[in-house]
Image (spheres, helix red, strand yellow):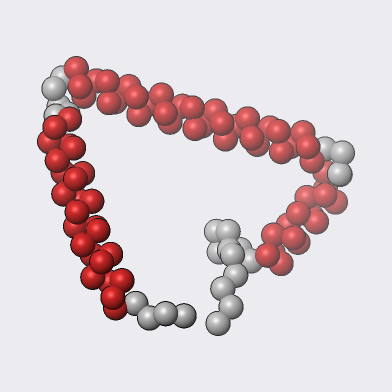
Length: 96
């Protein structure tokens, strides 16, 4: 069985076809500008998301909602269970 890399359930052929249409519509000279604009937009979204996450965390710590010791203990337990599960399933997996 051959596994192909898909991006959002779109195969390689469809991606090439969409890129071809984009080149026809906007022209090859506009593609770098479009890519830069998309990159800047994605960066702004990422920065805004990080800012919101930091504000929520800061507010929760100020209001004593987050107990870092409890959170750390829960994460440690989750990691132990995950490791145990991987050890168990590792012996059940078939070699390809």
